[in-house]
Image (cartoon, rainbow, N blue to C red):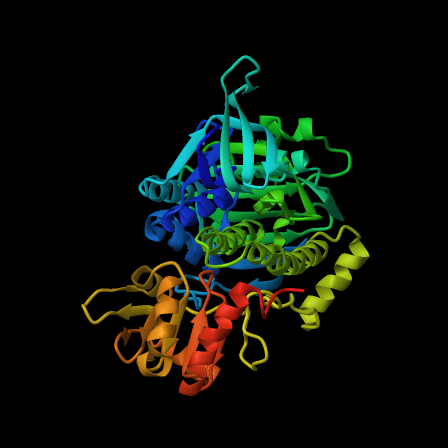
Length: 518
């Protein structure tokens, strides 16, 4: 029988990379199964937010991953070239990164790949496709077949891997999802778009240094910078245009010349394809010991820039919960909170993205004119705010904003080390207090926090260099807050007497006795 790994990760895109790296960082034996023989090497995703950048920081070298990135500003124009709305860049979000980041995906993937290969516990098996799976009480067996550029090789090598748990991060056409027989709910948003990725052959013109959505009823189209040296152009297909026609090279040059007056002297095309904007969510995310994540679990149109961000949130949500279950510090039922926490969040973002897409791509000229008038009059409602987590591993019965995100600033420790908060405290639970909590907690609770790998940071013993963590405590009206490894606020302590109960409530929530999701 194949050696038993803690977790098998199927798929080596951003979600699979992050999951494998975080689990490897936590010391688990991970095997990755990826059908392609190498990293994809092309930019499928172009945007992440500051929360997602913080996840990248936990999984890899963030400075290396974002070395060719830039802050991203968004502009919506109507068919006449008039500005409908301008969404400015956010130079510094609460997570320590710009709020909107245009980045080059291969840099992110290579930085995470480099980090996880250094752990010594992650076996990356590229060039192997999963062709079958079997589950029993002890884990999951995956059947593999060698894969090359032409697909699965019928007469090629066969193998098996076995793991306690499986994370299926194998994309929107997930083979694991099909093997499990999991259906997807279709929210009825389906559009075909031509994607053209390019590299600049001259300095990037200033009008392309941000993202522009052209809300033209004749043809919706958009452009976004990919870092500083590359540019993406996207064009909605019209009803009489076919995929075959629009993937011909001459179609790309025709569109670039017509809409942006660009030609072969300006850019080099590095990727051209037609793909479908869709909105679908798997009807279940867990089947036994197999979990769907990323595009295998959910897809959404790109108007909110949250598709890849959502997959990376899946990865970090699953990683710390699997860590506790594998280490015997929480029951298997904790893993059920993965879907109950993540599904409502993804569903809300999917509906928001659909709504933005319908506004941006209004094809009826009268409706488009009414839309433009609403923008000019300032009566167009803004997109809804990002939802917090409402259920799951959260401290219940308080007025604190549990389920929201906690910040990251820069700190200096007593030994002189200076850097981002997470880099100095680690990937895990974090208890941040105004003063040393030792007396309030006592040795037993401190020992429980240590077993959980919880960092205890007393702000009176470190330099909070930008004041972000002290300001956050003041905003909460608390003497302490407890953050989960995925940066979600578990709960706060109103005073020193409440500190012990905060730790006790975390124990109870992890054991499933309180705070479990409905």
